[in-house]
Image: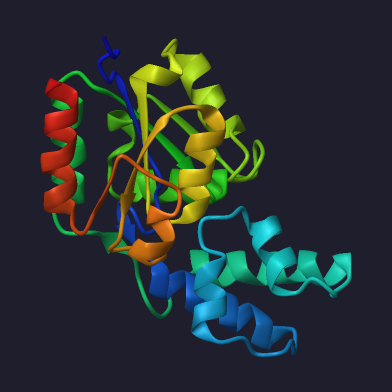
Length: 221
């Protein structure tokens, strides 16, 4: 008999929060500031979900370390500014998290965001109390390495078979597989459904509403 799910871990950008446009605009602005070769939206979107260091190395593999560091500084400056495109929760996402929290489910976040960035958005939307453990890419290994999930499970005393990871990129699903936990893909974020399905998640859903239904069924089972 399978263990019941006790812990739901969410990716952040593209899974709970609609921040793709803000991230892409900030990366493009950082590149422009440094006079780097302009990259198309698809290329920039593809690295969303990775830690910033890993994302920059993928975008500009031949640039020197000093350029990578400068890009990271300029990206953070643009993303954390209040100018231009903003970010918001996908419709129904915050309500879903609140309902899961009220049900007694343990909730976590495993994100490519920095600790500063995650803390800022948790404070802005007053939702930090819903999450029992969070890990960011600047304090442990970046996805798809399993360390984020392993640390969250260890902190909360939850086994891998009692955990499900939810994300919109193949990096999330690869991380889940590497950690030995179940995974749910969401196709309304960055990576296409076909790309997510290659990693054999339990299911791939197309909306927050479908995700809510799926989680309710999974938890009851």
